[in-house]
Length: 193
Image (cartoon, rainbow, N blue to C red; front, side, top):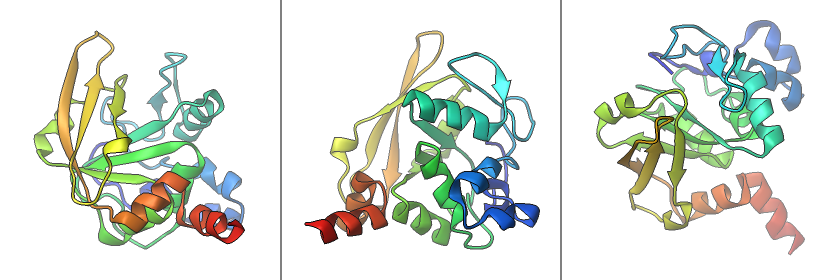
């Protein structure tokens, strides 16, 4: 993503709010206001499986159907604005795993953690420029522990790769949420035990 990405860019309000009680329907607005840093357009992203550009929610649904996870890469103060929980629920629901940005709005970062997402920040903000639209990303989540930075390998379509170090701020409880898929999933699992 390029530039500002508020909760309204991530999960638009207006007529979409009539779907707020139906996660599948409201997820059709996920990231439709975000600007693609490659083509400077909103709601258009390359599907790595088909090579075609399509709407962001459609590509995310295709990846989810294929069992492929995806990552958001963004800039400063990602998720600023209202504390709209759908802005964290929709990416998780559609198969997203990681949001990697230069910085987060504090409440949105917490909402992502509750939804079982892994919010990461660049240690070196210039690493944002390493990414290309058709990269594959690998990170060893087994190394996830409080206060420990993670290494991320970015493999480009031309076969070259870059390795960067990213920061995470999760505590033990939040890591449990991530591993369970959300705080609610962990509560349900513990209640069933």
